[in-house]
Image (cartoon, rainbow, N blue to C red; front, side, top):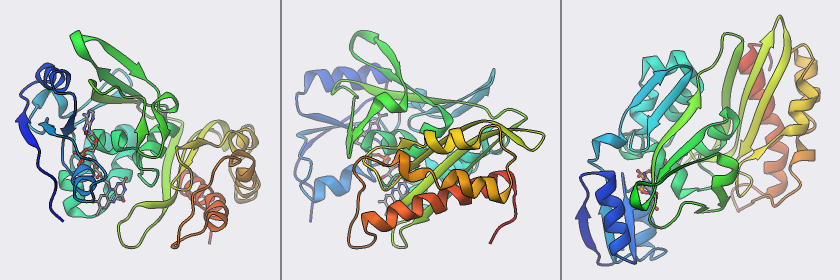
Length: 290
Ligand SMILES: Cc1cc2nc3c(=O)[nH]c(=O)nc-3n(C[C@H](O)[C@H](O)[C@H](O)COP(=O)(O)OP(=O)(O)OC[C@H]3O[C@@H](n4cnc5c(N)ncnc54)[C@H](O)[C@@H]3O)c2cc1C
């Protein structure tokens, strides 16, 4: 089906994009179009005006300095997956980007469009939650604010981003010498979207875990921190037995709505959350496993 008719404007700057959003009540931004165009074709969105931000250079690129990775909202998954600097500074981001969709999706899809679209099956929300990322947002009159993932994602396809705001960049801490991070997902075979995804960031001194941040997504409306699993890991040696024991606490943290469909039931996804947490921890800590 063709998209409904819309007026098209191309913005040259973030300020111009915000001005166009403010002066057109029913306007929507378009970046790579990989999430928005399917919505238009399915008539799930009918904006009368599209504001193309795809050529705004201030929204593109990856910079790493003072222990922080800053990725412009318009940076594509391919640019993230192929950045050697990022692979060294925060390898989980390059790894997660490389596992998104297929070549076309990675070439056109942007990290900003991915998080603003807020599909529960997306990889970035889970990874960025585990990393403790921050979202930088610009609004009318040059106002800016910074939001953490827990305050940004509200539910499926819903965030706290205002109608006249632009996500400008995403920041995440670089991984320290003692930190390891990994993302494991059970991917839908047709799209690559996460049926269940688990992201772990652990600090390991000697062979003991001294801190952990773990999030799961795909099976829940918004990413969920696995605080019971984190607590069970801290202070323990990261061996196969302790990892399996800690992961078994996952169901304590999954008390809210669990998503299910004809491909994978809610019950199955819940069971797989524990498995993907284990996988991610085994890979992060290089514990051999079957
Ligand atoms: C076949 C297929 C497979 C996929 N597989 C995966 C997968 O395995 N894992 C995964 O995580 N994702 C997957 N995706 C989703 C893909 O990652 C997203 O479609 C893409 O990243 C969205 O970015 P975009 O630039 O195309 O956004 P657009 O479609 O242009 O925009 C999406 C939404 O974000 C808004 N928006 C965009 N940029 C900004 C901004 N800077 N500030 C404010 N609002 C903004 C738009 O208004 C719109 O509402 C898949 C998509 C397809 C089509």
